[in-house]
Amino acid sequence: MKYRDLQIQTQREFPSNMRTEGFGWLVRGGYMTRENEILPLGNQAIMRLQTLASQPSFFSQLALPIIANQQETFFPITTGSVEVIHCSSCGYTSRKEIAQFKKMPFSKEEQLPVEKVLTPDCNTIESLANFLSVPKEKTAKALMFTRVADNKFVFVVVRGDMQLSEAKLKKLIGDFRLATSEEIIKSGAAAGYASPIGLKDALILVDDLIPESPNLVAGANEADYHLKNTNVSRDYTAEIVADLVMANEGDACLNCESKLDLVNAELLAEENDYQFGNILYALAETHNDEKGLTFPKEAAPFDVYLMNVPSKEMDTRAKAEEIYNMLQDAGVSVLFDDRDERAGVKFNDADLIGCPTRITVGEKNLKEGMVELRPRKEKVNTLVRIENLVEEIKK
Ligand SMILES: [Zn+2]
Image 1 (cartoon, helix red, strand yellow):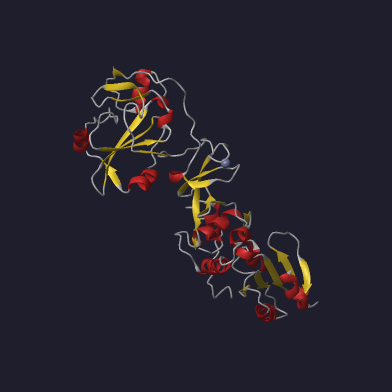
Image 2: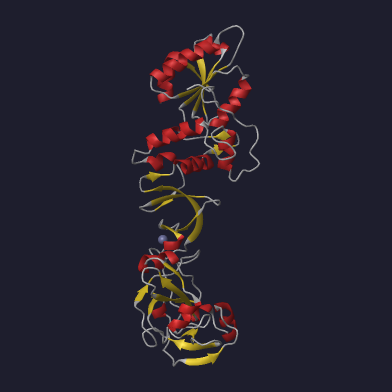
């Protein structure tokens, strides 16, 4: 294709709304507008990626620092919209809301008798733990919902230091919403002071760490009172014991017990459903230098950036056109910069756009039957005889 056909407009400056370096280079290279619209050059890049995606080694050819599980492939980046839990030792990768981790029981101790205590204005885990001078791990957090399908009152208990994963709960019981204050009162619970002890018609779920956490402080279902030393099975029965909580940075990996990382990432693929726009971003973010983009061969929009240096004596453009046709006939994809611009302008654009090889057709070398070949990532030019050009490029 020709430079002018694609109406490429490179930019001298980074956009003022540059979110990431990759975005900045894509705008400067003429792949997209600063308003995030893909331009013809960007579409060309995406089309090449689409062709490449049919190969099983797709992601390894892109040389991206991806993290993945069997279903999803992610690209870690601080601006990413997905929170992912990742183990750098064994590679475990999961969206945060459904990630698993190895839970550490707080303590092993004898079950003690239940004791009702006055806890005025302690309707949060924080205030309760402070008031009783116990760690949050020794408290039971109560969450109350109503199942949408049958209006069943749902009571969930997780340890006070942990957060419920709504995604995990939904997998177990289907859609739910927050319980109304009427529904809470009707079940026998008291908001802010609730526990599953003595409730009517409630579906009780506890996180699987609760049976291993003896003597938790829980609500007394009466305003301003809590119960010390509550124990599931002895004091109430849970219909479902399951993993219900969110993994966090620093938790132990379920596979290898290493510390888990929490990273922001963009989704690149879900099974064979590829997000090509995000893949282009990831490539630009990963493959660039101080002059522009440096796409790997397989992922570049074109194999070759071909340019002529306009001159008065010889028609370098006509010679470059011949080379353009020769390369295309040989199956090499070429971006032909046939503009009437100074060499320096074209060199800059070639660096910004980042095709793996630049070929320069100039008068001096043409007289010797040669053109200049320069790999994008190297600083050395080589002179190649025109008849050997195809062979050299395909190396
Ligand atoms: Zn691990």
